[in-house]
Length: 329
Image (cartoon, rainbow, N blue to C red; front, side):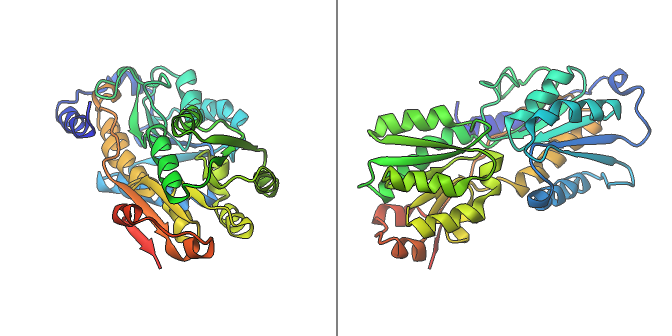
C-alpha cells in the first residue's frame, strides 16, 4: 500500500470517526488530564513539548484552562516506565501520549486496554503489535510512525554512495535496541558491506569511536535510540576528531557539523504538534482511537554538510548533490 493511499485513508478515517464510549471516562474530573510519557529527559525535548502544547491549542485545549498535562520522564531509565504508567493511570488520565521509542508505548499498552494511547514512534506499529493495521488500528492505540525501520536501508545506501570505498561500516546504537537494527544488518548484507556494531552503554562514546578506528571502519551510521540521539553533539565532535564520515537520523546533526543526514522532514516538533491536534484532541472530544488511522510521513530531507565533506577529503557525487534538499556550505 502506498503512502499516498494511507494518507487518503487517514483523512477519510478522520471524517468518519465515531465517539469513544463515555463510560470509559465516567470517573474523570471535569478538566481532562493528559498523560505525557517519554523515555528520555525533559531538557532535550523542550521543543517537542512546546509543539505538543501548540497542537492542543490548535484544537481549543489550553493547559491549566480546560486541560491538564501530567508529564512523566524516564530519563533513559527504561525500567522506570511501568511505574510511571501506573502513576498516570492512578491519576485517572483521559489519554496517554507515549513517545520517543517503543519502550513507553509497550509499557502503556501492557498497563491498560481501556485508556486511549496515542503514540509517536519511529518503528513499525504493526510489527511491534501496537495496532492491527495502519488503516484500522483497532483497540485503544493509534498515532504516528516515522517509519525509521524503512529508512534504515536508505540511509546506509546514501552513506555508501557518499563513501563507496568504505567496505566496513560502523553502526552506533544505544543500549536499548534500535528499532531498525535488523534492517541495518539486512541492508549491509545486500550491499556487501561488513557491519561493525557498537552498543553504547551510558555515554561511552569515546570508546565507541576508538573501537571504530581500531577496526578501520570507513564510515559510521548512527542509530536512532534515545540515548544516541541525545548525544548528537558529542558524536559530531568525535566524527570530526577521528575523521570518520558519519550518517545521522536527524537533520540537527548535519547542520551542527555532521557529514550528512536523511530524515522524515516532519519528525520531532511537527509530529508532536500533529499528534496533539489530530489525535489527542480528537480523542478528548470523543473520537475512538480505533477510528483514527495511523499516519506515516510523506516528506523526507537529505542534508549534506559540504564543509565537513571537504574536511574529510570527500567529493560529493553529483547524484547526491541532485538529491540533497539542503547543502551546507
